[in-house]
Image (cartoon, rainbow, N blue to C red; front, side):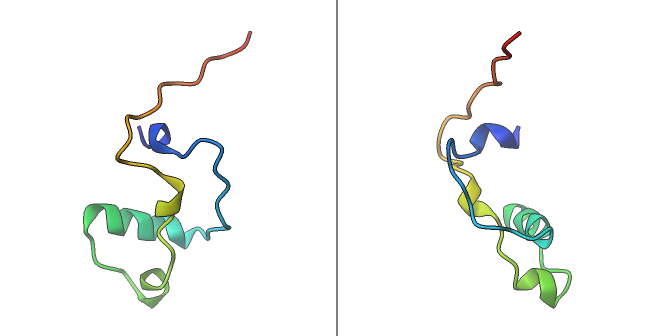
Length: 61
């Protein structure tokens, strides 16, 4: 679950939809599809992978 590694209380800069593609390319060691995604930001600032992942959020009834 990727959401478990999201930084708590963190507000990132604005990312484009191409950033998601760049994130996947970076995470899985894939080459870029074109010049647009090769220049995109990979959204890695939004996550903290070395930490233990957070559990599911508790619902308030």
